[in-house]
Image 1 (cartoon, rainbow, N blue to C red):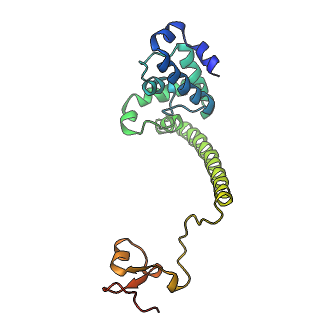
Image 2 (tube, one colour):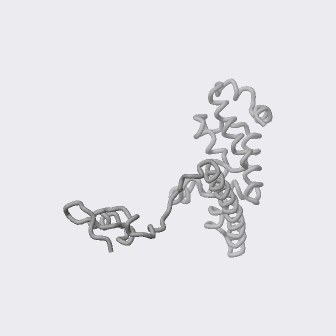
Image 3 (cartoon, rainbow, N blue to C red):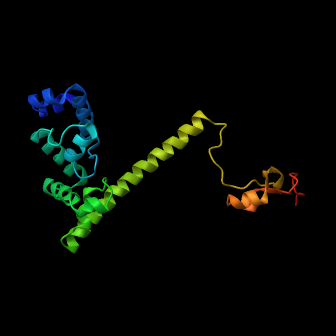
Length: 198
């Protein structure tokens, strides 16, 4: 992959950019191509130079085009739509929104018809659904790994202790200030001793 990316850059660009900048650019582009997402959600042709310290336009036209193709493929849209989304982010949308807005969101917000808006909404819903499935699958694996590696540890329990004797002795005012329900504590009196158990 790195060799392919080096071939996409013009030799003069390699000489001008310097080794560190080239390495950073290659890493950024490789991450973009491998993950098939762009740094700013629109197309990495503008984000990569900023992220690596390269001057705008430091990417060869063929490399910029490759990034646009990869971005379009990832989101299920055409290269022309990726370019339109990037152009929209250069205007007021870029001022009103976060920089990592996806092309589907940008195009959906600026849809030219109800059918176009519906198409982008459906593509975005599918992308979010797939991402949610990946996140949940990883979460399940993480929980299993945690239980396997640390079987004696309890991660977090929001269940109040069954017995009042097991509840922590805390002044009621402190619990109230921390929005802790009194059912989860054993209130103490002013002198610091625990209040009588009920």
